[in-house]
Image (cartoon, rainbow, N blue to C red):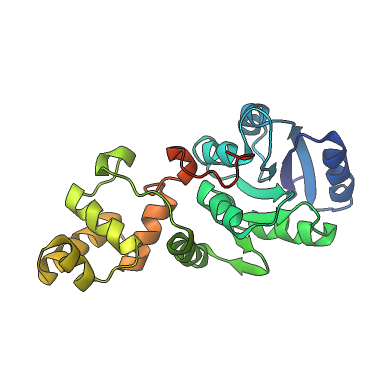
Length: 240
């Protein structure tokens, strides 16, 4: 039926998938259009059925849910992903949103709450704990969490097809880390005015209004890779 939220479920436990189907079948505005038991199968099927929302387990056979979600950003940029996991951990929430998820919930989430989250993300919103955020809100949240948990910053402007020069990217890296223009000037051994000139060029090239939006742009476009890409994050070995 038209108007329904098309949902795809990715989980390696058939009993859990069956339980989700039973819960969601009671909703007039949600329809489960497919399911997969591992990351590879999900990436094969989701581009075919074009769901609106994907419920994605993090711990999956073949490739994990974070990796699958990152690939879906390219394969199906309009699909919204809700991460489901047995572990409710703040840093996993951060990595999940960095990977492209719109929401994150432990698997013991109440059915009514899960349905509410599905409806929210289908409208383009983000759900972090009890907070419902829009694009600007999730951008600010990402920047705050990056400064809290950290991550690798790219080494060259060309690595992720950035329109910025190497010096501009170097300055943007320091903005992302939380430095002021004055601190950047001191750190790089250049004048405050030179930093301001570079910032003006950065904002113009990225089409954003201020330095915070520029930092968020870099995070949202993958210019600051997930730690797992560098093989340095070992705190969650089951998902990396």
